[in-house]
Image 1: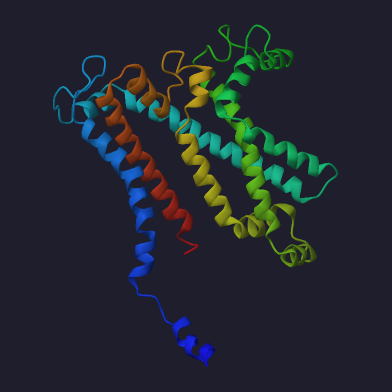
Image 2: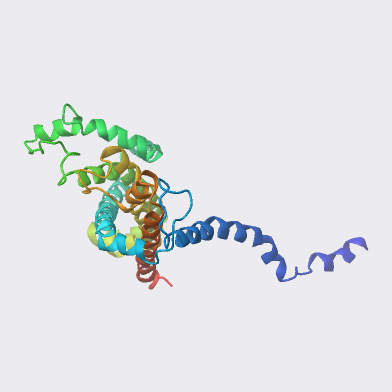
Length: 302
């Protein structure tokens, strides 16, 4: 009797407002952590405020900080370096990571050890990687200059990090060394998810390896590919640690990225107004690029 009386109560539906009530604290916390800092930066971007001169904003200057960032070439130069590192770095890491993932899928001897070694670079903090490559680039006995000299490749007199033509590529090489394994591991997991009967059917039809990769494997893991590319694109767009340790934005401003520029103007020069304006310019650019990438990448999948 008692069990039959409780059945209707168990099947009773919760009021529609209960799910919203449960997630409201998370929404409030999310808005506070994201919206408040952005709005604080937006307000400061319209004021002249240098902490070396005053602990409070010194006057409303309208679009002055934005005009200074755009007209002086500060933002444009940093944006060019950032886009160069981001686009080239993402492309190289994807191609190398896919090649490594295809080798891992073949189950060749020693692949278990290779998988373990692949994880190591991604577990190291970027600033530690920066110090590691700083010694490897040392023109007085570093491993990389020695290897290049042994191959007959001419090196700049100021060293790889001291020349404006090679410093940015040296930073990019260190990033590729650390994050290519991340692509390899994620793409390897994606390739393992492909049903084996599809691969077997393609082999019976004598599909070439290149056609199998381009027409079967990559289309089947397209969602994984796009997500990992977007993640690395956003991470590379905020490149800071390697620049700080390896070159400090130099020589000149040849390796100054947007992330390092914000650090330089905000925490070294204490120009809060200019740093806030550049923050908002950076937010607009990266969100526009990601929105375009998401639109074209997932248009066919939806």
